[in-house]
Image (cartoon, rainbow, N blue to C red; front, side):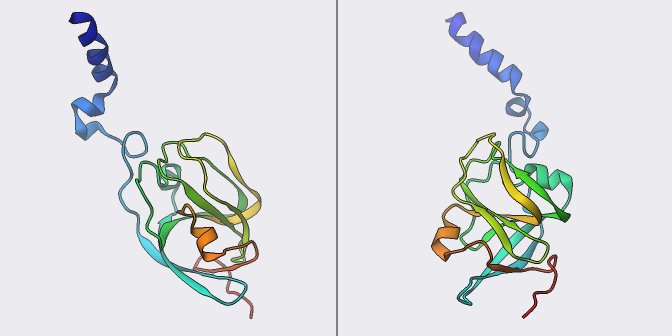
Length: 164
């Protein structure tokens, strides 16, 4: 009986959050609190407008945690990672338990690339393959459902005003 109890006790000792929930940390063993939300619109090449309410991941701490440990993303929700200036975006799915579509958006508000149905919990790098101002994470399958494509326009306050 003692041999069976020893691994369990060792596991408890290695997981202080199990013994003291106050020591739990976002991104390590639980999601971060919901971030402030803002509107975002994606306009496809046929002129269809798709409205979203997205959480704004602006500071490095929030960006590092992102959607980790979130069981799902709302169909018209998501998280927008604002890099502040155009740069190569390198994402991963560490501690992210639901599949996502990652939409890489240029400073001008154009979709550069879409990585669809990313693999949960993967440490593989998902790159923008060019400089982007932001990365938008949506529920897996959203890009296919809405027929989103590179070149589609994204309206949100962080992007330069679109030219018409």
